[in-house]
Image 1 (cartoon, each protein chain N blue to C red):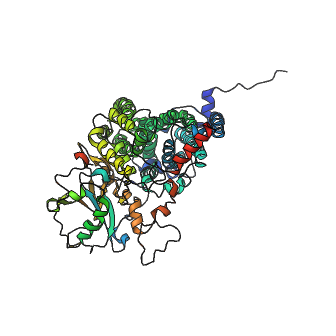
Image 2: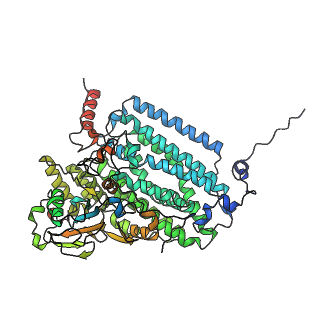
Image 3: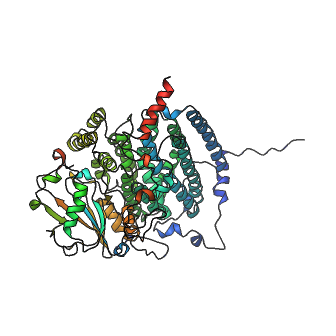
Length: 514
Length: 120
């Protein structure tokens, strides 16, 4: 008897059955009541079927690929950890890169996972819903693998154990926290422009190059492998962000000014967020890959520039802030490092003055600015430290109401002057760090009046550790911030003289001598 | 006009409204062309605080780390409240000097431009 064997489905058919075919239009409730988020932002969509799936990946194939990547990743992590891989990094200063990264990045991956889960529910087209669902799982995976790769260092070095507590409380993590809070409280289309396009497409290389290549250059195979494991996911994320932009612009001409405003806003917000990443590249990696300035030129000016040329046919213009970011690439990392260096008791990682040869590297990479503006102050601070008078600015910072960076940037065109902008809303003053942040504030003041500014909250008495007596006669709000942040005292201060420095030297010696 | 779009009424208080400071107000201070301090510092003080306290206590505590601090000729210092020039009276309070909640005091010290004249 002849068996009747069903023909194996082609990739295209399988994809259709496993994604769009699973979607349906509601009948008991109106579609617009089930999906109210996709219309209130003002974006007009006429036909969701015009959404081109940028990659045809079904869930079953997705799980297969991802589990394969996980197996490879964890095999390498195990090998690295069991062989005391932490002692093979270039220099114990490198571990501070991981501390800064741990506080600032995995918590944002988690926020991205939450954001894309929401998008998966809110979008009413089956194509974007499936893609957002996968991206949500990716982001969750990145959040986990980053933490896992760094957890081995936590056994040996100080300052890593309270990153989750510190994320929503500490001054220097507020910029990233505010970045994602702003995106996730926007509507789904703005979120897609913010995270899917401006961050993942235009700026992501600036985050990944120093982390992955920086890890590789400095002997950290664990972090490097996490980065590589995430890269193929990132490629998918970028195509999703770009597809979403094109889809909005193709659907209705009224969408253009809205999308343009979001691109302007989020390219700037992302740029501000990346100032501390640039600082890792120029000041914290013992063995440097390239300068932040060079990375900016390659990835943002050249690649981003050609992307915007490509989008010009839709009427999109280059983000308004582009000129200012090009001017600032010469300055922001130096300004950031001075801002961190002067607060040795307010971060769970160490800071230091670059060595003479590292200063020469900075002079070579920043011929227009380093010797003129930044070398003299760094040399002065170095002398002070050597004379036993290490800089410690104990005051609390003023922050930008929008990006929540400290107000440390210069007036465009004048590196010696500080930049301040001010708005008044309902009789109250609000300060911003730049024309771009001021414009963001002025467009939606209702949103940004709620910004959490750590120093202000401390002064209101909202940042007290458990057990503090707020009614005591000598109570001063904000005096117990270190305990409130759960800062490990061993993790504070200059790298020189730190326990990490001593332990690393001792352990490395044990590994190489009798 | 606001460009905010929401699905429901959206009204939230400012996190830094004056009433949150229980009789105090925020004050920011910046020493221009001395960027070694990276950014202005913030204080919460009663409006009755004398301006001399700001200079003699808070500014001295923070800024005296800089070698320019003891070179300052106070008769030549140029003061601004935000972008508006003003002349504070040391012996009067913040309130009497017209300094309100979240005002930014900027002061310039002519001839002193930071380490090696770099603005730092």
